[in-house]
Length: 187
Image 1 (cartoon, helix red, strand yellow):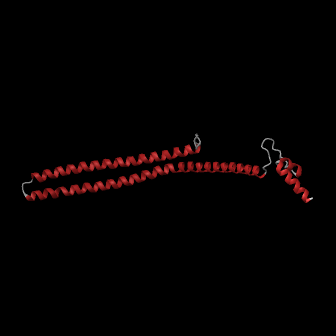
Image 2: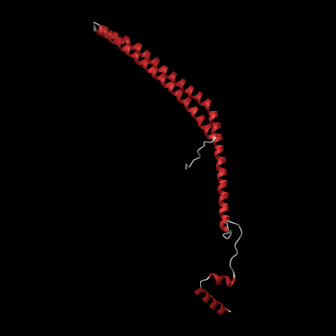
Image 3: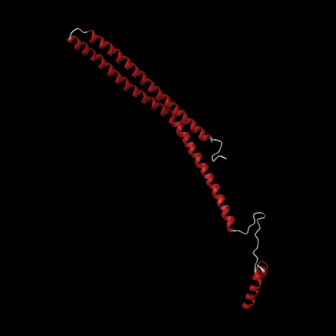
């Protein structure tokens, strides 16, 4: 009913399990890195919002224009320092993520390679067996076609009807007369 076998070969199952474990660990690592990046972005936004609120309080509380400029310039240095720290955190997160992905890959590459090699060997062995079976079936078919007088039931060859008597018995009566005339003319 189905073009594929219902059972899964053990080599296929182990290779799928190895690939699944590898992809699960990779996705866990990537998700962890993404979560850390989101936490860092939330922390940056909170810090920037606090800095903006503090700077706007200083600007609004300033009485003179010189106080206004000094309050604005006083807030730029802490903001710049916080942005620089944010960039360093991103670089550290990227490096940690790369190290974690390399660790996961190194951890799973041997098992995945081993299962892939076993799967390839099994597929090659099955393909060889299928080819040999197909070749035997073709050879049997060719053998049967090369000797068409072999009966499948008893396997004995059936002799050809030879001579003029056999020919006369198989011919319709109208052709029997014509063949008798031809024989008489040739003799």
